[in-house]
Length: 141
Image (cartoon, rainbow, N blue to C red; front, side):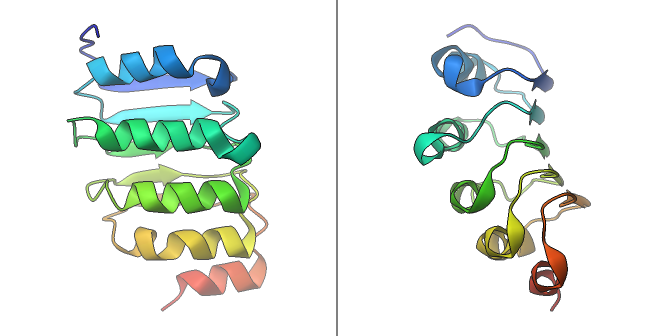
């Protein structure tokens, strides 16, 4: 894998399912990555395979510098929230998590709450997720 001296990587409207192998190679070489933004990249699909691939790849990498993760507008829903919740347990340094427009709903948010409560987040965007009162109440102590 090539080495990339990149701290921030951002793409939008690129279906991750179409570029999973090259993305994995890129991430392996981007050991200094502190900000990853994948907006509207089709992270869901059958079995949420692209999101599962992304989470497994990031967990297996040697860098632990990821401070910002933007997965906005990816329709993660409940299945994606389950994968993401597991991944977030491996990113204790994450400070910014942007999940707006993913249709998480109260059940998806409930799948994330345990992981979210263990992070030193300074920014958490859960807008446009259809949380309603029930969802917001899951965040409150």
